[in-house]
Image (cartoon, rainbow, N blue to C red; front, side, top):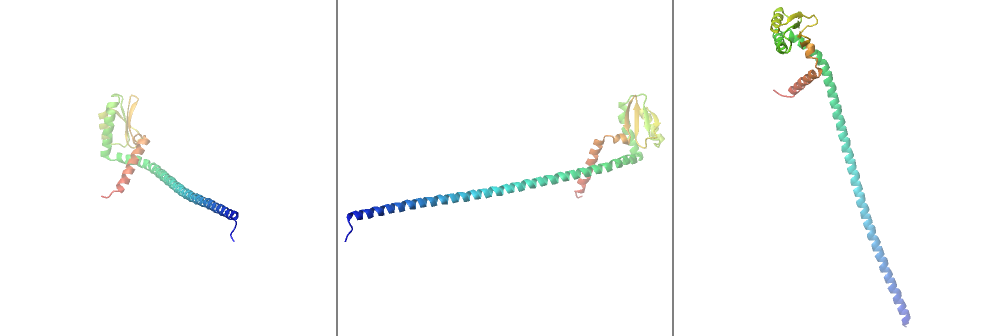
Length: 206
């Protein structure tokens, strides 16, 4: 026995609706799955970018910290070297004064000292009224020769143990150790140059 035509039509309509519904559900499910896959991929990409950015920030911070440490160490090294230089100069100045006095005791050095004074004082000071101040221990013949060369009256100075000074008309040329070392900045610069030269020589091979 066959179903009435009306029943067959109703069944066909129900089947068509069901198929259409299944197709729509499948399409919605596929779209949702595709969207979920895309969102998941985006989330993973974002997470990877964030990890890379975080790692890069950590590396940059580490490099910056290293640079800061290096700068601090270099500054501390420079400060320590400067302190050592100051200490060395403080020890060297009195030694330099003593070295000049010791040099004065050598006849050849003393005569060269006197000649240098004459070369400077001769053309600079007034020709009259000159007074030559000298150590009392300076040999008399040397004093007489220099005084004659300068046209100056010799005068022993008990305060001098080395060096010479010539006065004339309120001006003077001072070649005593104290005067020669009076320009502390220049003396320190010369001492530094000498120390650097010694350090340079230590680093070379003959």
